[in-house]
Image (cartoon, rainbow over all chains, first blue to last red):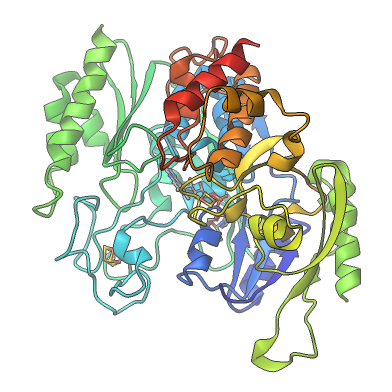
Length: 316
Length: 211
Ligand SMILES: Cc1cc2nc3c(=O)[nH]c(=O)nc-3n(C[C@H](O)[C@H](O)[C@H](O)COP(=O)(O)OP(=O)(O)OC[C@H]3O[C@@H](n4cnc5c(N)ncnc54)[C@H](O)[C@@H]3O)c2cc1C
Ligand code: SF4
Ligand code: FES
Ligand code: FES
């Protein structure tokens, strides 16, 4: 690990300013992703700005009946919050399907959104990777790509956004609230938060340099039945091959977001509209532009069957 | 400057649960560096204060030191184990302020003022914690390398169930959480045992859960 200095900021704007004005600085929340990558020297921050003392560790009710989640709320606390369990069960389900009990206790809401890909070549510093080192090439495209993306990828990088929580947040149309180094606030819909990175796969989100996540806002509850089904190589403590977050109403309409398939949680309103016509219709629409590799083409029928499983559970 | 910075951090740490940002006007930058080494070899040394198994500790650490290395290398508490050093095995599991985490993926400087409990703090050979005793009774280990992490996790899992934290296998998210075999197995998935002592660990936990 490279040497770094460390500070605890006293306000979100000050934290943002510190990261923006210190060359090579990064925020640190739980550290469960960042420290892992620092050990491998994939991340080499020179200065860390810790966000734990900013009072952003609470879930508040909003005026319109939704929730506002502080960025430092742990994954465990968020998934166990009574209002989340009651009204946003898809979010509890998604969080609990990810990582392990120990990691969820430490992982924060903002950090979870910003976790980096799990492409094995990104982690292997002996291999070329455009995301780790722009212009280096991509070892995955002609390599082992079974875990990687099938849609929204590019000729530069076929990795996925690997997380679970954000997939549920996409189904719920959550909004990420931030503060910029000049102190101004901004709201970014989760739909626009993760980028389709094209030929700049090292730029993964809409955040500007030094911009800090302060909260995630959940709109008013949708009602309906909530599902998060995750298919993985072992039944617990593994990343998704495919996951499906769904909120389905009794008349058969609803929303569906897919995880493990793209650089961002994958959802299209056109595919949602196909829900009353069944899983095949939804997946045909959602994955119309898919460009899978030979090794990961199975993810598309797997997505269909996973959604079909949810619809069958819904009917029973 | 280092001391100055530490004072600010510790003051903030003491003030009600880290919500004290308004009370302190300025960020404290811990740039304490060993000036004798100079140049590129500069290391950031930072003062760290935490309580381990009830004993207050004051240390001067390289900012890169993980909580696990602090415990093992600096405090010589070698019960917590380093399996993977990447959050993948659970051998380093300890409790921080009552919740379990992977100490390998946490920096000591993130834990100013925290209370850490390791396997050494749960019980002693003369006075075993009920979970330690149950592991012995049920042969919940073979080589024993994963065991301190398993036991810390197992104690915390039963507490998490008591506190109503749901899991991936909980069917009714709004009902009362129960310490079923399925629940305990799922909640223990962050602790890998290469010897495969899982079924005996589950029996030990079931015994303690029954009380
Ligand atoms: C073995 C293992 C298995 C895992 N399995 C899963 C899984 O199955 N599913 C899943 O979803 N996740 C999984 N995870 C990932 C885990 O969920 C993330 O590591 C965690 O959510 C990151 O949160 P953190 O607070 O620790 O982030 P950190 O590591 O502190 O930060 C991550 C990134 O976010 C930035 N950051 C943090 N806070 C802010 C902020 N407020 N504003 C701006 N930037 C910020 C940091 O600079 C850093 O770049 C796994 C992790 C491990 C180690
Ligand atoms: S898929 Fe992306 S992350 Fe993986 S090796 Fe290629 S460029 Fe790197
Ligand atoms: S050593 Fe920490 S999880 Fe393996
Ligand atoms: S007892 Fe040997 S690794 Fe678990």
